[in-house]
Length: 277
Image (cartoon, rainbow, N blue to C red; front, side):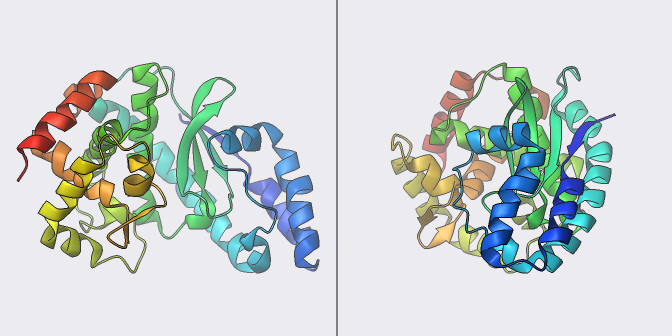
């Protein structure tokens, strides 16, 4: 059984009380009543995510977000229970210790992230991004692969472009194996509408994107540009396309990939990228 911490009841209590308040008061009460109910969770979350300004955009549309979070919490809990053991089996990793899953509401900073909570690897699921159970299946499989992988590595991995390409490529392959049959763009966008043309564009400009990534391998900001909030050629997340091209092209089983060290993963990416044309 998956280990799940659910902070959404505290969010629901906050939302009920704050609904009639002004935006300023809603922001203050968010910190006091919601974050204050789970200080350890938010301290851990903000340790891996920039501390937001108190002008939380979610407080301006509490009714919609509250409904979204209620649906998202139920669906995500169900998906975690179903998907987690399948991910661990697919990666061939020991099933103990297992990740801690946190159901929470963030501030649209990330849909999910891996961190540490009480010294353990934790996966924070930000339910304000919830779209559908189908998309959540792919997202949970992807992020759970990262969590299991980090436990198996026994260290916090770096954020340089070569390793991120290896890690993200492996997580995409895990989500394809664990949740097969989804539209191809779901393995990059997890059911969010509006990105159907992203993958065709990437395929059309494949060599250009690979060349740009190759040039960014030694750039300290390359990881943020290709995998974070940065734009490359006016588009987000092109690193995920590159990662998929590299790791899918290796044609190696997931347990073999998961067993690689950080140095071996980096070297594999550099070697394979140099051969791609």
